[in-house]
Image 1: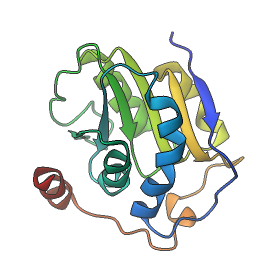
Image 2 (image 1 turned 180 degrees about the horizontal axis):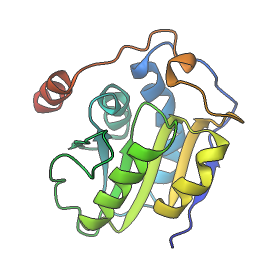
Image 3 (image 1 turned 135 degrees about the horizontal axis):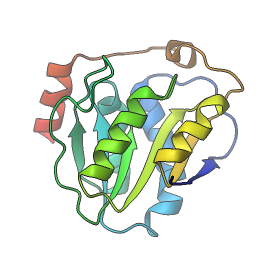
Image 4 (image 1 turned 45 degrees about the horizontal axis):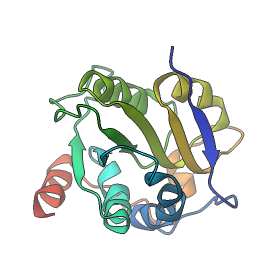
Length: 172
């Protein structure tokens, strides 16, 4: 069993203007750690991880790769790129139950990631133990005591569909 550490990034943030705003706010928290990681890349959970991952990757000067996910509970819906020896920074719009982040983390490890970081705007404290079993580090801007619907944390929960997520990544 892997054991990670949870990094609370600065002051508690309970509301984000949008998914993009959340990604921009993640930049300073991740930037503080990125120099310690080997060959880092951002792995965006499709679809709503993409609007969070884009400003994060841009702010760090890192590539963004797609992490397709079958949210029915099956493993990743498509193959992940090979991540041999790399640090994978897995990004989503937040954690509710942790199922999506857990599945993508396991798939990234199977794809060869040497070090796994989960970088999310929101990760409830009750999900922390599950995330720490998969990830070496968890960076969350807000760690509420209890799980809430992610929409609660956003003024504009500007969700996108899978086609739009893939289009945005292809345009990068």
